[in-house]
Image 1 (spheres, helix red, strand yellow):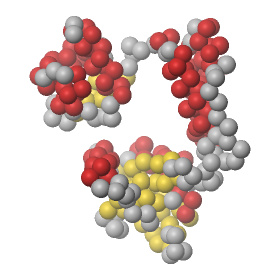
Image 2 (cartoon, rainbow, N blue to C red):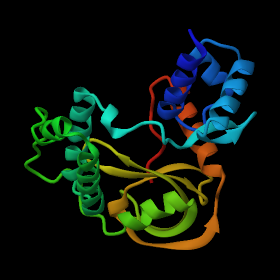
Image 3 (cartoon, rainbow, N blue to C red):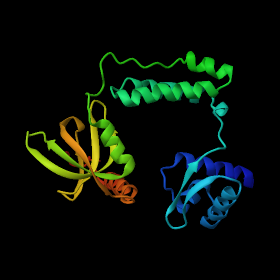
Image 4 (cartoon, rainbow, N blue to C red):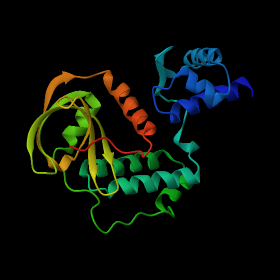
Length: 236
């Protein structure tokens, strides 16, 4: 494989692999040595690629200015239209509006032939009923995940027991018919899945748990993979 081809494949690996991705994982993906990955990362940075991270921690593509929307293939456009249509019908007003905005922005950058493929995509989504319940606090939960900020919540569990919890919100998880908030529960000192529709009130604490979020998510995924039955974390 020529070096330009390898650098292109390395950029693609940084786009698709969960960040931060270690040099060892990139070396495995590329079939080269870790030392070669270090050299290639330096070359990409010198060429203008914005790659965050460092040796021993992992890398992520901060901003990708090399991939133009015109490079979308027809099947990639189908995937984009289908995915955004599903988001628009999820019952989350904020995400639905964002999905419509994304599709409009992408379509505006495409050549005419690709714009027609967006308008006349052959894949459609039909959901006669709202998929998820209304959750007024969902924007706050999502913002806390982004900001990596602890929350205090008033929660009512499946048995009707009320409690106040301090949590580190890690991710909003979209199950088939239910939203869940994956969190680290400071009360239980363990991972917990909270149903957002059972959160009676939520307020930010101003306390940051950065940069623990990535490590906690990695630990949670590893614990799931190690479980013989793949059981989810306990639900509060």
